[in-house]
Image 1 (cartoon, rainbow, N blue to C red):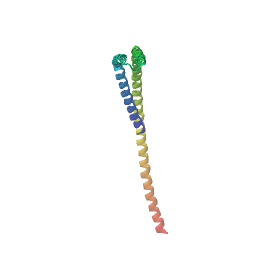
Image 2: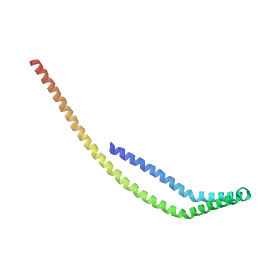
Image 3: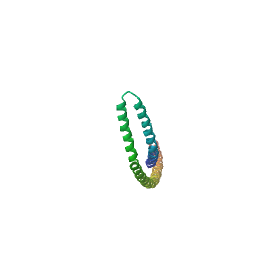
Image 4: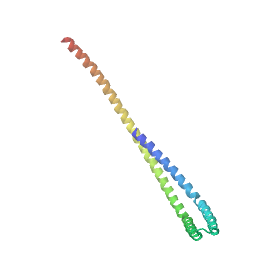
Length: 148
């Protein structure tokens, strides 16, 4: 039973990791589009700050830093995608390894179930023998009591 629980737990963890990896993949797939939209939005904001008289220079410097950051992010997108591919390959290998481990655990679990069944049979036999012994002992006690 413990092994079965461990298998279920391992499967749940596996499913959680699958779901988390799926979310990350979707995030990185949409990253370029979102970054381009963010850059366009920042450019619009810069245009708005240019027409504004409040902290115009500071706002433009801030937006320029953000644009530089987003440009760096765009340049790093290929590195991120390659890293993700490597993580996916590692994950696939991990899944294959876990599948093999789960199969091994299932085999061990079957072995333990068989052992448990054998032990339960022995316990049942001992219980029967003890019950018979108690009956016989009770009967002998009654005889001894009657003889006294």
